[in-house]
Image 1 (cartoon, rainbow, N blue to C red):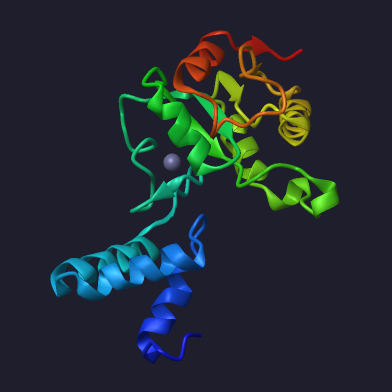
Image 2 (cartoon, rainbow, N blue to C red):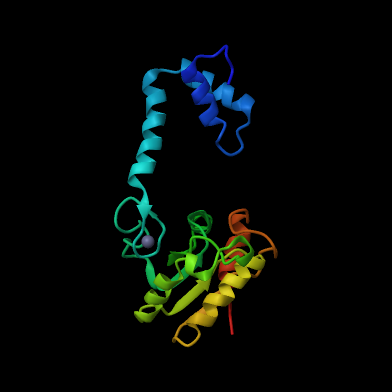
Length: 201
Ligand SMILES: [Zn+2]
């Protein structure tokens, strides 16, 4: 709290400073920028934040971010619903979509299994995935959890649950550095990993 600033300005600096990658100096600079900018522009930012928080929900099929009942991918008739790519977070889905080669649909787990962090399989959207597989419309599950210990363990856990069902399970791995994440892998590396996906036995 800087006494030289008014209460409102201090609150704005404090809120901006909570954003990732924004230190106190940058928070101050942004607050002053907002202060001097046209009211219309500054309010557009505030309204965009409100809209995101009010309108974005979870897709009832795949748990991706959605503005309606289902996300844009699940409601797209051109998408192949028989191939389901399993990711940890919506941001992984976005990284895969950026390669421009995915025609499949997705299932967002909401994280990975990590017993040490207290994240058990029951905390993830695994049951809804099994339900989709049991419905009989899924031919292939592409496991695109992160290529690190937790991501691998999560993929293997799901593979073991799905094994008795009549579905092919592949893992996105080739070309992806072990221990890395989907989010930070480059587009060409991801595209290579998608094309070179291998079956889990
Ligand atoms: Zn969806």
